[in-house]
Length: 78
Image (cartoon, rainbow, N blue to C red; front, side):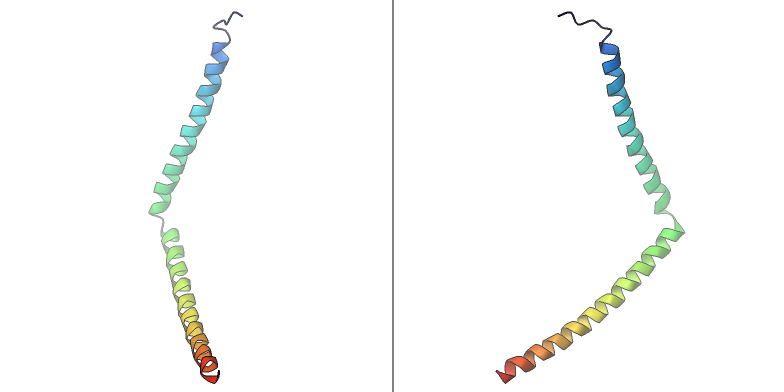
C-alpha cells in the first residue's frame, strides 16, 4: 500500500480547519466577555437580580420562622 503525499494535503487541511474553528470560537467568547464586562445594561440587570434575590431570601426566612413556630407548637402538643 503506497501512501502518497497527495492524501496528506486534505488531512492537514481538515485538521487546520478544525483548529482554526476552535481558536476562532475561543477568541470570540473572550472578546464578548470583555465587551460585556463594562456594559451598563449588564450592571443594571445584575443589580436588579441581586435585589430580587434579597427580597426572596427575606420571604423565605419569614416562612422558615413561621414553620419553626408551627413545629414547636406541634411538638409541645404531643
